[in-house]
Amino acid sequence: MATLLLVHAHPDDEAISTGGVMLKARAEGHRVVLVTATRGEVGEIYNMDEASSRPRLGEIREKELEDAARILGVNRGEFLGYRDSGMAGTSDNQNPASFHQAPLDEAAGKLTKILREERPEVIITYAEDGTYGHPDHIKAHHVTNAALDQMLRASESWTPKKVYYTAIPRSLMQAFMDQLPEEAKQQQQQSTIQITGTPDELVTTAVDVSDFIDRKKHAFQAHVSQNDPNSWFATMQDQIFRVAFGTEHYQLARGKPGMALPEDDLFAGV
Image (cartoon, rainbow, N blue to C red; front, side):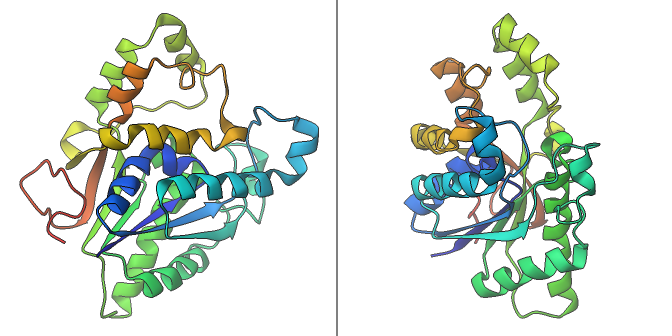
C-alpha cells in the first residue's frame, strides 16, 4: 500500500480537480491524505441565508469538507489553519491571518510535519499559476515545494517518488468550451474565474476516472454552500460532465515517469 497526499487551498477544490484519483487510489488499497490550507471563509454563499451563514462560514465549510472527504474515502484530513485569502486584488489578501500573507517557511514547516508523519509516495498540488490565478492556489504551490526543499536541505532519509501538479490541457479546455451551450459560454466569459489551461506539452499523465464519476460529482455536491444552482457547472448535461470530468490530467513535476508518456496511473513505477 502506498500513500497519496494532496495539498489543496479550500474546501471543494479536492472534489473538482482530484476527486477521481482519490477514489481510484482508495479502490486500489492506497492511503489518501488530504491537506487543506484554509476553511474557505471568503466567497459567495449559495443555498443558505447570507446573514446567518457568513459569520460561521468556516465552520460550515469544514463540515462540508468532512462530508465530501467521507465520500472520497479520505483516510486523514488536516487543515494548515490559515484564513481564505479571497481573489487577487481584494482586501482579504491583506489580512495577516490569510494564507496569502503567511510566511513561507512557517506554512512549509506545518506541511513538512505532516509529510514526515505520512511519508507519501505521491503528492499532488497546483502548478505555479494556481489553475486560474487564485492567490491561495498559488501559495499552495509554493508552500508544497518549499516543504519539499526544506526536507532536501535537511538530508531527510525519505523523499516522495513523484510530485504532480493538477492540469487541464489547453486543447481540452478549448474543446470543452466549444461544446457548451451559448448561454453557458456567456456565463463563463463573464466569470471572474478564467481558465486558459496547461500547455499540452507539459501534461504527462491522464487518468481515466470514469468509473468514479458519480461519486466524484456527489462529493462536489456535498459542498452545499458553494454550489450555485444556476451555474453552468450545476446545469451541465450529464454527457458533457462525463467528458469534461471523466479523465483527470496532471503534470509530473518531480520524479520519473513510471511508464511511457502519457502515464495513465499516478502510482506507475512506485
